[in-house]
Length: 580
Image (cartoon, rainbow, N blue to C red; front, side, top):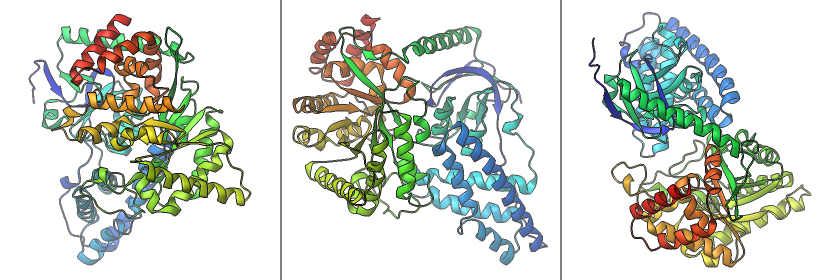
């Protein structure tokens, strides 16, 4: 069918930055509902076919897991391990066997019915994380069905030249197979910022635009496409002038990246001699390897929940200790801030029965869960304290709302430490303990909290959400989510002033720390440690080194008098232009 070749501009959700141009490769894996239902004349034969398909799936997934561990790290490989666990789950595979034995359905029909039923249950859940696991279930089902019917359709292994991949969706096992040599970027019909597709795209460094919706039907195999993974912009059938403009943008992007590499070994110091610590946010020990060579001076946030979310059962003290020790050793004495378990509500653990909540962000999570489930908390604290003997480890409690929660958490830390000492264990000396400032009540209580804690780390992502009362994942109100809101800046200033007054250091581990536009403001406010995605560190170093702190202080005083985020952004943009 011929398509209109007039240039068309489409918009999706940019989730992994980068500008890419190339020919379209439309990926159409087998869909379960394309296979018609049928009865089985020989149920025993169908059971054998199903068992063979399961064995083939297990072999393929095992190979993919090994590849993911080498290229992406344990956290991402755990996504695929979860799919193998589905194959062995009593609520998944045995029902297929029963449909064949008891109702004489074919193996294909048994897979189709079971997968649709189980995935449907997950899709109906209120919890976003659990809803997104339905994609994993359908992925396993599609893999089973592919082996049952011998499907030879469009496959990722068919990609042997540079392309822009276009698909309804990309499952975790699809994304792990992507070869960066050939796959320049990808576009999908569905998907959001919290989906596994987005997480894996960022890990691979592949430009990606998700959630294009029905507009994706305009894109045909072999057509020319330009995507911008930063803005979500897509250009179909680009005219020569458009291609030239995007090529110029791409050249600038590549030149900028090359110039940024020169900042790896430099410090973030202003022209008038004020230095700031540049740290990285990580989720696994593997991500700590090589951070020092990439320009990171510390780990400002180690998200320990990924260790728990990738496990099929509660990680033991020894498993946790090994992960934390490896991370501490990789940083060779540089600071490693380990955040205690931030789980619950929006982040589920399959082995920890948590209640379904109407508003999980305001519910039973993080420090609230840990103070309630003390043994879980003590086990983690013991593992962290032991790891402290192998590096410069610090402990940070999430979602502290006031002094009482801080004191309860600190008491449990002391209990865990005394347990270890009495057992003769090797423990870290003088471990600093601090809290995340992500709830407005904690920011307002910063002066009192600063008397007792060793440090603060401002989590702007949640601080904005709680202060402005906006769900940043809700497209209807996401425009209100802005860390340049005057109220947010006032709260940040209050926290930094309190830490300075009491001689404590303060960091920031939210997205704002990695935004170059925010750098003059954060320099002016006197933020000590900035923690961000490792890929942002060099650009922030570059920005800070162009600034004078004295000028940033004067700018900040002006910004504190402005009324809207737009006014603050405008001032910052004008200020940075003058620094070029």
